[in-house]
Image 1: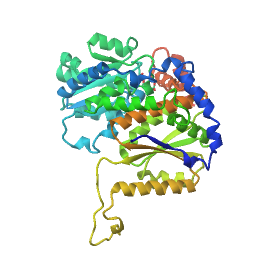
Image 2: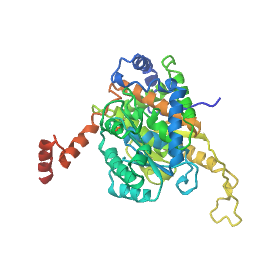
Image 3: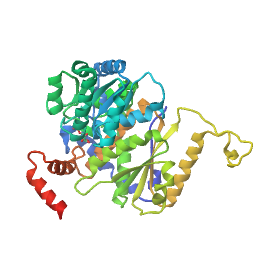
Image 4: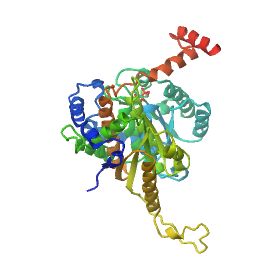
Length: 448
Ligand code: PA5
């Protein structure tokens, strides 16, 4: 039976088996605390049983909306940032043809906006949309985040002037809080179709709500399979699964054993560019969840073998504070062999007839051995293949491991107080009402 595999054997030169085993009680206890909803941030545990509680009706109404947008749009612009952006982006990048933007397709192209405030990016997006038929999905849990609010204002006005206010309203879907925030108010006023982000699901844990599911369904992928994979992960890493069989606990314990021994940076490694954004999503999940109170492992990412020709040098020989978590994919979806060449000028004939995935696997094995030699501990997480099911599985697996890890270092893994600091400075510098004093102070510092 295909299953997720977690191999922590290659950490034991750097942290002992006893160290990991000694965490068993703490993790089993934290599992209870999490499921009994008595720990830090317990008002944000809606994600915990989300996969098993999504109903067919929920999925149906998301699919229905997705189909209606698919029918009327060449492009769907998904507006959001952070947790309202990265989950869908990760799944779409993993499932899309690598050159989907250049190929004809029956599905609309999904383009993201509102995850930066770059003038060129958004100007060029509007230029592109001038001659395309498009719809907008705007996502913001708080409904007040500046970046997506700016993008949405631009896009809404563009769409309205292109197709008229009434048609524009039928092409805009908002995903936001049930009652609070400017986006909810705006949607009610304009009569947009809306979906709700439950109160008890935080942004970075929201990919299995309409936040992730609607864009994924619009792109034509099976949200049923995604949720099914997540539901398997929910069951297999559940409350009654003991530490020894609970892979989310094992992964969380292994990384914390390394952290205790001075390994402060975890690099997520992939050997396929399709997983680049899964790493970005994972970075956000762990970075925002654990990085507080002067604690937490710094989550970083590399794409191998590409980055073996850049950051590979640092990993091999730089400061010994890094460990790697490799996401291995057992089977590719396509087959390609290296051809024979009669001239053999590149001297590759010794691998002619072999599949690229075979060469990639040898690169992976060689790299792991080299990095172990260079004293870089290694955790390996293997999925059988990249598809909706296994992406859903990984998403839930990491959410669970992250929550448990956060409890282990005694932080609230569901808030992000640090994110507010830049926002306040930005508002003060922009002259927003209520921030006058801080604006004065900041300008004085800048003029010094
Ligand atoms: O994880 C989080 O809560 C954040 O990253 C949010 O998702 C991000 O700040 C966007 O917030 P919102 O959906 O309220 O616009």
